Length: 506
Image 1 (cartoon, rainbow, N blue to C red):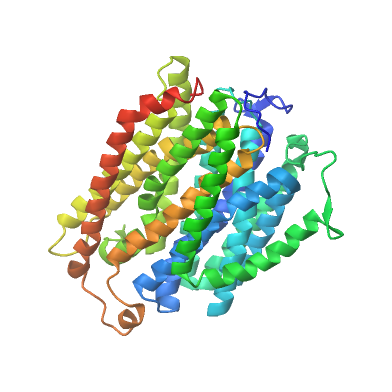
Image 2: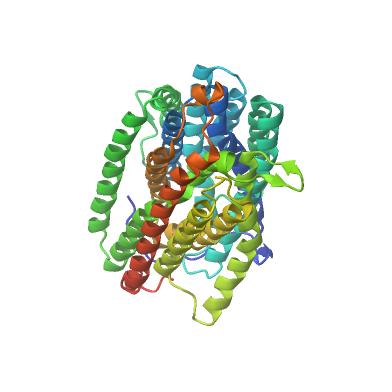
């Protein structure tokens, strides 16, 4: 691995011509928009599809959801490594996008084994796509470029434009017209993302191409390493198809895989020749671990919060009954409205030397997450008699989660690209998503405390009363609130100590 760690100059690229940023940022933003449209469209429907179409129990649906989302965010470690060392970002993104498009279209087939196969396509595709599109954004800027955090916040708007539109469109089609319509629309979204990415290639000026490694071996057993990647991908699809059905095994593998990655990075860290590089990479690893706390709670949105919305939230708006899946669009809408504010705010505070350091931003994000769950608890506790929670409390929760997310997620992506030594940026970006993978699995375990009824029983007519379920959810949300608030306060107190180890990188 390359141990270089000094700040790199801005890479050669186009002059700033779009909102003060390279034009390529706009294309990468809309590529991510359509990819996230496909992902969040499927995510909005997944738990409902399992409980209503296949009649899974709440716990079984959460287990499959957790296995799928955990694997989705574990594979980027390998995808980032392959892009860094062999494929380059362009090929990795294109391979990932094609696999995901196939996965979304396969979801349209109402067969359980085909469904599991579709999830395996999405898992492997995301591994190639997700870390490398984010790494490309980082490569548009030098390490010390003050526009970097602003760029990732703008990029995050693209993510949440897709997250806003997908539940509205895919959720409506899936729940009202048929599941295959919602999943099919998600597939077309992914294809649009690939078309936008292809249009961006002239503006990237080689930044997405494979690394030059003179003298390196190009083949094994007479077959090029690139072809071995394709063979390995086919085998990985079979493995993922089996794993997504075995939640306990996924959890065990995550522990082994995650421990191996963490130990490998720690070995690399101690071998770095410069103390500054060691400290910075150490902070990146620490904050990546901290992010697990945030995402474990935040990702209740796709599981317990979804069924809570379906069973216990008043979904009537201007006389119309909204589909429960469409409420997942609220987070994306809040991000779209608030991301420009945060982007300008960070630049404004930076010019006046008042911008919070990265660890403090993480602490603020976790605190706002805790306040969001406190709002849900209050809504549930004050609605015990009827079990029907006013929509206001859910919207307030999503708003607070969105502002918390803006303090942590885009800043985390930026942090990885700023603090990682050259040569391991893709691997560290994959590690960031591996932490997210742990969080997804943990989120599914937490959600199982809210499981209230088997899907088959509910389908038979024995649907539990809202008043019986409201505090099943409310009690769990209240516990999450206290834990998140405590973790946020603790991180805020130690943030100055952590920031010193960043050696001037803000």
